[in-house]
View 1 (cartoon, rainbow, N blue to C red):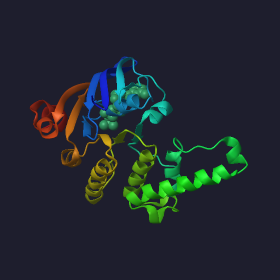
View 2 (view 1 turned 90 degrees about the horizontal axis):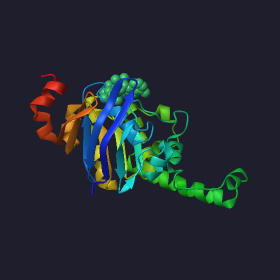
View 3 (view 1 turned 180 degrees about the vertical axis):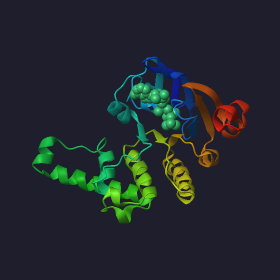
Amino acid sequence: MALLEVKNLSISFGGLKAVDGFHIDIEKGQLYGLIGPNGAGKTTVFNLLTGVYKPNAGSIVLDGKNITGRSNIQINQDGVARTFQNIRLFKDMSVLDNVKAGLHNHYRYSAVEGIFRLPRYFKVEREMDQEALRLLDVFGLADECDFKASNLPYGKQRKLEIARALATQPKLLLLDEPAAGMNPNETAELMDTIRFVRDTFDMTILLIEHDMKLVSGICEKLTVLNFGQVLKEGPTSDVLHDPEVVKAYLGE
Ligand SMILES: Nc1ncnc2c1ncn2[C@@H]1O[C@H](COP(=O)(O)OP(=O)(O)OP(=O)(O)O)[C@@H](O)[C@H]1O
């Protein structure tokens, strides 16, 4: 059974069928790409998978659990985490606190323990500091843990956003155009980081990307969306060489 099984997923905005009968099966540990022209519906698929939008039709099953129609917070707790096209960090918070924000799903103290600073509050905070530092270390960001997030260079902000998403201990990680705004060196480093995340955390990753070098370099399978519908799916090189895909997407 696939880790993610999506069938017939659909949503309309007014008269526009933004996503129409979308399907995808992603195996555990797979690095999967979702591509397509501007406005094809890729980010809307992410918004459906994460509960930002509720579908008009279709089903989303994660690791055997039907998560269709659940809220954004519930779906995160079920095991789906994401990053955004435009980086969304807590810019005025420290690098460490950004990761700790992601850890709150799994580390808890009561309001009373927090307000009155009872021993359990300090114990949980200490454990969260250690876990956050461990994650930052994996991404080579531990030395910058006290920096304000907005003071990190762009490439490191992307890494921090991935670290924060991983802090929620997801089963599935969604990356929305992770290479957007990156120079070729940063993109090459990002490809290493994504491969590293998959291998180190045995993570299943679905990413939206326009950078074909990144897509062909790291994705094992692709789904191509066009006008809200699946145009093609399959192994990366087959899909990228498909004449219909070349025509619709690459414009060659
Ligand atoms: N909340 C909304 N209300 C109305 N229309 C929307 C909404 N969200 C998305 N759309 C429309 O749905 C279509 C798909 O948009 P979406 O952002 O998913 O495309 P995309 O493939 O991610 O594009 P890009 O590559 O440019 O990011 C577009 O026509 C968009 O204008």
